[in-house]
Image 1 (spheres, helix red, strand yellow):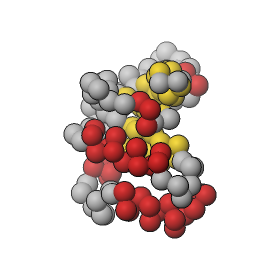
Image 2 (image 1 turned 135 degrees about the vertical axis):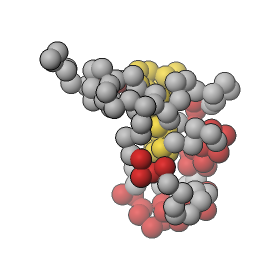
Image 3 (image 1 turned 180 degrees about the vertical axis):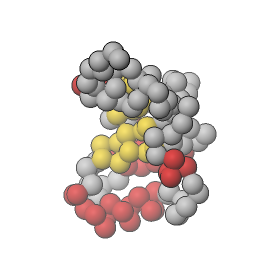
Image 4 (image 1 turned 90 degrees about the vertical axis):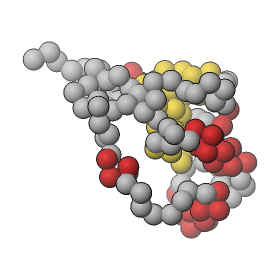
Length: 128
């Protein structure tokens, strides 16, 4: 297994806090339409808290996503704070969400339910 964006695994930058999110939203304004958390698998409660903040802040309305390498969401994880969730570790030989071979799944959250929309991103892979 691997990571599609290994450079994002390094510990650089500032901690992601509600205050730092507010600064980014004010700085970039309505250009920001979605905030997607990548990783955070070891701290799902922190991801949940930041998503909740984004849904209650009043600077701008944004959609919220989480790209997780987990196979499934942690027990008790609240979907109401998210618009999109991607689950599954990146396995290079299977490809990402565009590959019909991928193990990853992208879900849109509708009425508190996870609706699999992975097929909307995929293209057919011809056998070799």
